[in-house]
Length: 307
Image (tube, rainbow, N blue to C red; front, side, top):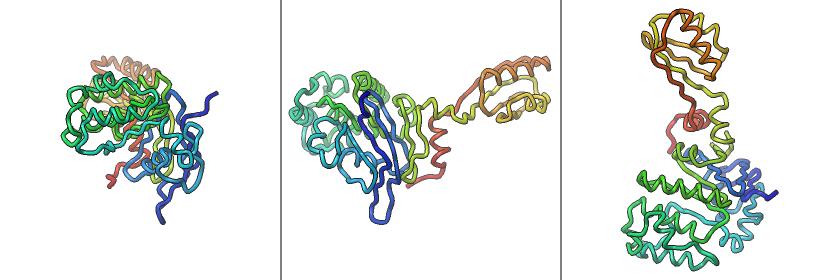
């Protein structure tokens, strides 16, 4: 069985007296997308920079494609793609020139014209970097990370500043990378993006892992779902509460509008339906909703604003 593309075991990173990363462990399998999420200052950037070989760890073990990302940096660089927020581009350089330059460093680069077309950059290849829009800069940075056919890609906020069409195209490209066996370590503040793209999610806060699993596992664990329905007003809720599982609550938020909160499953729906039938009450509207990845993220990291 192939080793994971990224193996981080009990990583520690300090800056003076500040402990930025405190025992973080992450594995990124080949052909999988792993999203590393956390509020500002959580330690995710430091973790990724250690994996990229730009910072030395102060403790723990890190292997990227089986190599030490610091000691073996020169051997590792041609095998990975790194998407930086700043783009790493000279402001006066034309978009197409920069992409061609990066492609020239690779032994078997992707077709540059095909890549620019796929990312909607065909019309700006002769445009200086400083004149590109924020979304165009992001797409160019993504193209530069991918043109060398990397085995592993680090994507930092890949769709920041993009319009919906570009965002969707980027998502499709990430899915194609996974299908081709490329490993992807993704950082993003867009929870819907992580939920859509990631096979596994790791949430860190204050330098520690506070949650990990697939999006489905994280949103289902202790799921606080909601069943909202409308029927006759002022029905006796005590009977319904007694029939529901212990983790469920039921309230009448407004006359005739009821909400059941808890682990909402088919049995809970059946219990509510039976209760309504016992009171000859017809349900005129009902809908269920489950916890989202954003709900999980906020539950684990807190709701306060971070700077």
